[in-house]
Image (cartoon, rainbow, N blue to C red):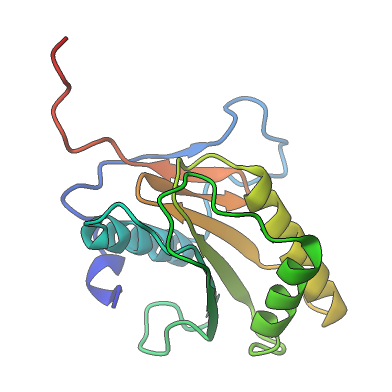
Length: 178
């Protein structure tokens, strides 16, 4: 699905990778993610922007292997919530998030993966994003693996937790005149 978008951003995508908090990121944090992860995130945003016609979005979490990004294998496992127009989808409790994370990561034993959380709203970290990152970290520890990077993808861009890297898109509409 996203292979057409992996090597180039959409015509609507005019973004720049920047630090979430310029000047405040610890020195051990990267300014950029692995280029394959950035291409995956950019492709997901471009596909999301093209596919949203009703302004309703189904929040979803998927696990993609890092060792095979960009090939036909695609996502290893995914979970979808209820379609919504809300900026912040109905929150799930900790136990349900952890169970979903455990089940998703059970499909990738011993593999390096990235978690892709697609949701409505702005590409700024929210309590829900941090809760998903914590559930994934806890599930990965239970399986004895490293916690995956969480890419939160919206139609306006993406950001990565805990890496504090993001890419934003400008609106493709002309500015309104007052």
